[in-house]
Picture 1: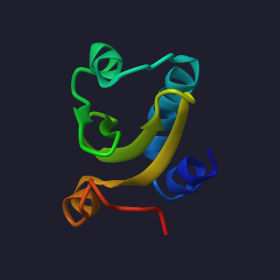
Picture 2: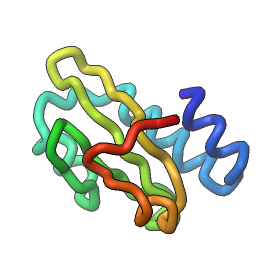
Picture 3: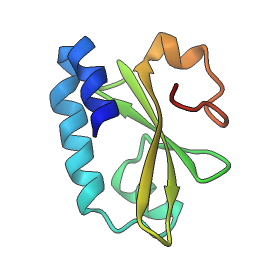
Picture 4: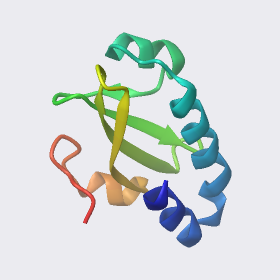
Length: 95
């Protein structure tokens, strides 16, 4: 949550959408990528258990890696659409 909080402190309009995503993700029981696609049709499933979520429409992007068996979601990147375009979603890591 601290990574998301740090982002919305710089981008206040992302706060409520990120909080909503966090709450939904916390309550979710995703066991496979299809579970995510059923809940978030616009999510993009990538290699290495990574998923890209559109936040606040398409203004921001959130990349996570999911350990399905452990039910743990790791934030790998959160940024503007422009910042997202400059990274490799399959390998990016939070600094």
